[in-house]
Image 1 (tube, helix red, strand yellow):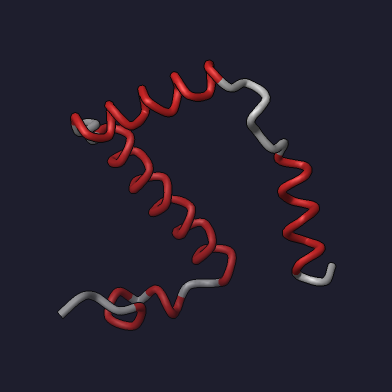
Image 2: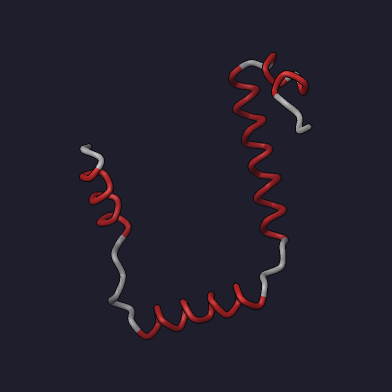
Length: 76
């Protein structure tokens, strides 16, 4: 059975301490993922995407445009 907030005592921490804990957990997961080796399939896909972006540099949508469209759809 996986640990719960109660069994770990996390539910007794202050909100600030819980937020700090979430950040620490997130950082530890990110560190582990960063160290994970890239598979051959992932490497090939990255190379394909990089080559495509070099071959078609104008075929991109700026982040500002994407964000504006998403906010418009969300009614904001």
